[in-house]
Image (cartoon, rainbow, N blue to C red; front, side, top):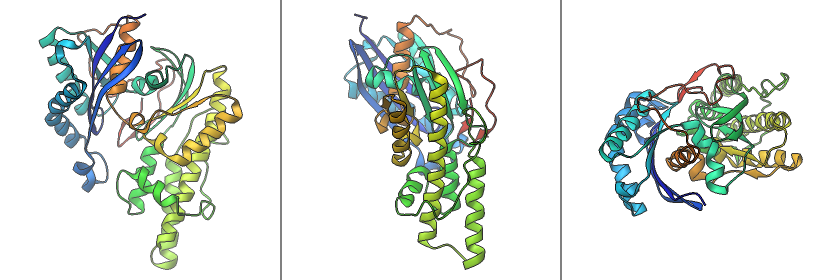
Length: 359
C-alpha cells in the first residue's frame, strides 16, 4: 500500500478563495475544504473584476488556510506537502496563492507542488470514486469548455473545446441581458424550469462541423436579438417571455453539449467512464442529457458532488498527491501562468473570456 500522504491545497485562480486538506491513506479523505466566494464584491459590475479578485485573495487566503487546517485537525507539521494552483487563471489571483504557498513551503521545508487548475478538475473523479484511467472528461465552466481524454496523472489529450465563449460565460451573459442576478447559471436554470424550451428556436452552433469543437457566442447573440424583437414588438418582455428565452437558451446549450459529447466518446475509444466537472456541471438539465448520452454509449456516467464541481482546493490537494505519488516534482522556480494548456500538442483555443484566458 502507498504511504500515507497529507497535503494542503490552495486555490485562487478566479473569484473563489479556497484551501483544503486531503489525505491518502489507502483511500482518499477530504479532511476539510473551505471556499470563500466573492460574488458580493463583483455584483455591481456584472462579472469578475480581476483587480478586486486579486486584492480579496490577498486579504483572505491566510484566514482560509488557517480555517482549513483547524477543521482538518492538523498543523503544518502534519503535512507532507503543499499544492497550489499555478495557472491558468486571472494572474493576480494565481500569484496571491503562489506567493502564500511559497512562503509556507520556505518556512516549513515542505515540498511545493505546482498544479494546473484544469488538471485539478480533470482528476477529481479519482478523488471521489477512484476512477481508473483512461476516462473522458467534459470540463465545462465559466472560463473553460473542453473534452479531455485523461490517460494518466500527467497525460491529457484534448479532443475538442469551445472556440469562443465557454458555456458558463454564455449563461452569465444571458442572465445579464435578461436582468437576472449573477452568477448567471443558477438564475437562468431557475427561470428555464418554468419556461417553454420550444417557443424560441435558437441555433445549435457548429453541429454541421465535424469534430468536437463548440461555439456559444452566436447563441448568446441570437438570444439578444430575440429579446430585442420582443421589446420592439411589445415595448418590453413579460416574465413568461424571460422564462421561455431562458428555457430555449438552456435547451440549445444542452443539446450542443450532448451531441458533441457523443462524438467525443466515439473518438476516445474504450474508456472507463464519461465524467463531467466544472460549474456548469451543476445544471440539472445538462446533466440529464449527458447521462442519456452515456447510457446510449454503454459507458458509466460520473459527476462529482456539486461542491467539487465548482472551484475548490480539495481537487488541487488531490492533484498534488497524485503528482507526488507519480514522482512528478516541481521546479522551485516555477512561474504563475495565466495560460497553461493540459495538452501542449493541441492547437491553442481561441478567445479570452471575462473569467480568464482559454487554455
